[in-house]
Each structure stands twice: as C-alpha cells, then as structure tokens.
Length: 210
Image (cartoon, rainbow, N blue to C red; front, side, top):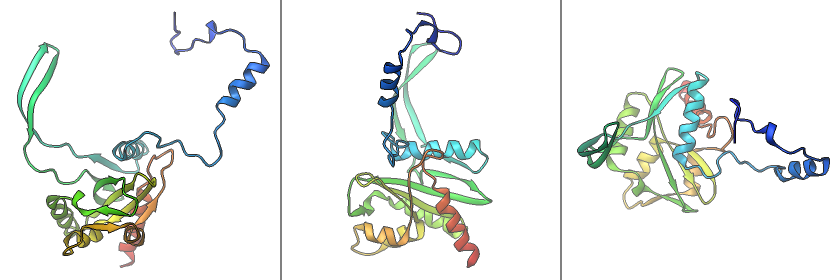
C-alpha cells in the first residue's frame, strides 16, 4: 500500500454511491448538546491541553512543574536509550502548575474525586497548603481546579478557601455545596479544553475592586 505525502488513500478507494454516501454521513452525525471535547481525558491532560492553547495564542504562559527526582540506577540496553531502574523523590513537590497571566503570577493545584457530595481534604498535603499560603502573601493568584469526575463538574476554588477549610479543626472534607458557594464553576469545551482563565479573570476583577 502506498500513501501520498498528504497521507491520503483517496486514489485507491472505490467509488461511493449516493446510497452508501448517505449511510456514511449518517453514521457520523452527533447528537445536539453532546460535548466530546473531554472524552477519556484526565484532569491533568485537560489542563495541559488548555495550557498549550493559551501559550500558542499568547494568552498566558503556564506550565506543569517538574517533580524533582534523584536517579539512583540506570541501565543502557542500547547506546541510544537509557532505562531508569531506580529513583526516588528528592523533596516534597509544591503544587502542580505555575505561570503568568496579565502580569499576575499564577500558582495552582489540580485535584479530582469520584465522590459526588464532598471533596476529601486529605488530598491536599501540608506542604502544598503552606506553599499556596506563602504565594498568597506575595499577591499571587492561587487556586485549585477541582473535578468531580462522576458528575463531570469542574470548579476553580480560591486557595484562601481551601487553606481555611484544611486548617479547620475536625473538618475532613469540603462539601459540594460549600465548593459551589465559594468557587467559579467552569465547563469543558473545545479550545481551550478547560477554560479556567475565565475564573482567573473574575479573581483579578475582585482584586481590582478591592
């Protein structure tokens, strides 16, 4: 089989009758109101795709932070390829993402749960809470993107609320109602996959009013 530079195989296809063409078109008809943009994607993949879009359109520069790893043992089955056999985390990571948007420093964490009524606070670690608090003291815009996977709902929750809830004695989770009341809800789309900067615009507007 030969492919032309465009990758097309059109020259090798049999002619399609009108009846067959009608069947082909009908098989690809999407139902109205159905969003296929996030099918099969994890929250991290959605955010990464959104960040690629924001960067390509020169809207914002946001990247996932690399996790610091100490490599202990490496094998070289081939000269051109190395395989890491043993490694460990050198230090606790801070948050998942940081960057800059409209002159503001952004720092945020991405979390998801299959719970339908609450989000467990144990999913946030002490060093992450400390880091977000320190960034807030420097006037950074900090938040968490929380996905309720079973409900397919997404919230951009201010770090200040997360920190307050995490430090509250005997509190093990944030209820869905609490998150609804203190967050900006966003919906998945096509470009960007997850338009979280719309919520950041609201954070900026609130700050400027203050």
